[in-house]
Image 1 (cartoon, rainbow, N blue to C red):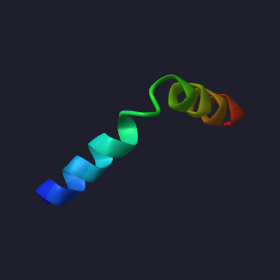
Image 2 (image 1 turned 60 degrees about the vertical axis):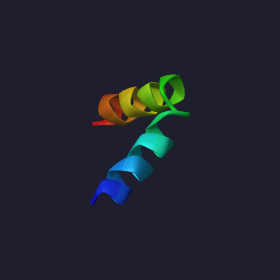
Image 3 (image 1 turned 90 degrees about the vertical axis):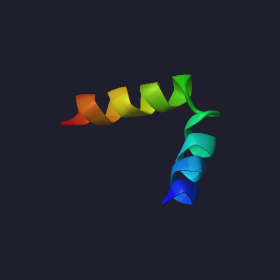
Length: 30
């Protein structure tokens, strides 16, 4: 489980601002 958490962190670190934009677009689509 610790390994998976580290992987998630590694994935989340490089996408802070563009990921938020993507989330906003998805939220606005509904």
